[in-house]
Every structure is written in structure tokens, then in C-alpha cells.
Amino acid sequence: YGRMPPRSGRAIVVLYDEKPVAVGGVYLDGTRFVFYGDGMEYLRKHKKTLVASAKIAAELAKQVGGHVHSVADPKVEGSGKLLEHLGFRHLTGDMYELRRAA
Image 1 (cartoon, one colour):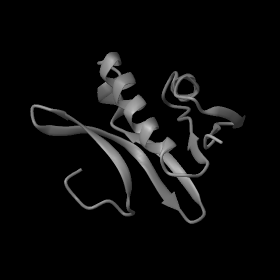
Image 2 (cartoon, rainbow, N blue to C red; image 1 turned 180 degrees about the vertical axis):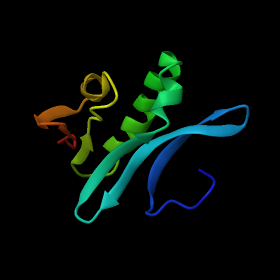
Image 3 (cartoon, one colour; image 1 turned 90 degrees about the vertical axis):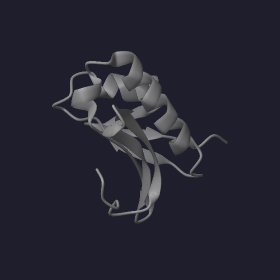
């Protein structure tokens, strides 16, 4: 945090004591949109904030006008379940997809 992202996109930043502790959002990677989150280890201690910020980031993802992909982190217990709660559907392995509303 505190530097320009490697790509442009839409994101939400979670602050604690005016310092960024987590970020999540969506960016275009070639021909597909990617949903991401970083700082979840901090937010796992604050589940309501984690879910609320993930919902906001998912709303940003729904606005991009295309299918959005995400990978459930196998090191983060419940990451697949959270993606499903946000509206993503399981594709294969750790890959999930959020389909654009018709």
C-alpha cells in the first residue's frame, strides 16, 4: 500500500487508525476481469468488516460489464465460501466466476 497499483481498476481500501490495512476490488487483466483481496489476515479478526468490505468490492466487480474471475486462496480457510456468498459460482479447482447480470 502507499504506491501506485500495477494496473488500473476499481477498489475499496479498509483503513484502521487512518492507515490502510486491506484492499479489494477488480481489475482488467488482458481479456478478463479479476477480483482480488489483500490484507485478509488482518480482516479475519474483524469478520463483520471483512464481509462488509468484500460486499462493497463485489458490487464494484458487478459494475465492470463482464465476467469476473477469482481464485479462492487455499491458505485462507473459507475463502471459497466467501466468494460463493458474494455471488461467485465455483468453476473448477480454486477458480470462481461472477457472471454479469443479463
